[in-house]
Image 1 (spheres, helix red, strand yellow):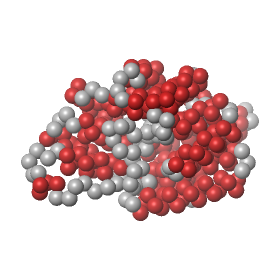
Image 2 (tube, rainbow, N blue to C red):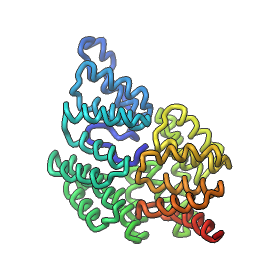
Image 3 (tube, rainbow, N blue to C red):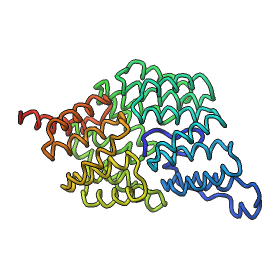
Image 4 (tube, rainbow, N blue to C red):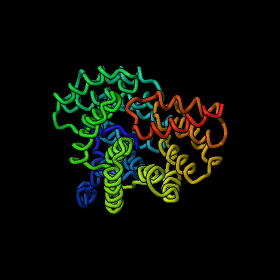
Length: 360
């Protein structure tokens, strides 16, 4: 999934799903949009985006203005890789229910397509409205965009404001840790990440901490974090949350390439978003199947997204295929895309780039 935090309009995708009220349709069989909307939220939380989309559409047939269903439809289309439909759904949502959650999704649509200036401007305007929780959410998203643009001081100011709005808003310290990494203050980043995972040990957060520790040469502590990742994935799988995307990337870098490929292929069969394409291409590469990986890696970068890993993975695959000019271009682009990139991932990309440049 996208690394963006969930908005106030939808539940975090990592929240353990709960069941809708029993016999909802029996109690209120007519015009009951609440039940399919709630079911859509549950499927989204489980990363079952096809079902989430179906149920959101059912809810919207009854109540076209339901904010939650409008947001989930946009999210599901995004996660399924149906990007033209995502934009159409956004325009409908913005016409029917203009709001902070919809503005944030508009911003992400432009960010995903590489237009960071427009994405940031949407968030700047949205930050003037809404509740304190809305403002913390939007300011944190904008801080991430500013960091990717290299505007580190401005990103820090937005995060300071986000913490003033809601001191307990967890995505703000997550963003702060990436900003500390961008500034080169890795010890502060370790401390911030440790605080984050103590509160919510989501695989993405724990992997970032583990990779930071690996970069710093603290291999034993990194391995301990990766064991936490494996345990958390098992718990999420057992609770019905689909973790194939996250697991594929983790196993490709820190575990079993065969398991990474199994998970990534399974996810690719369900949805063809740029994030899934990246994971699938990377799993194919780690399994020694670079010729198959290349067209998938190209699919991952088809929107021109400012995702450092997409370009690094594509460049690494091209390097393995002897496409040195393309590899050099895309590795350099990946390394320049986000100064908050995992230092371990940066080390790997630099090593590949050095190998290419050493063959000149």
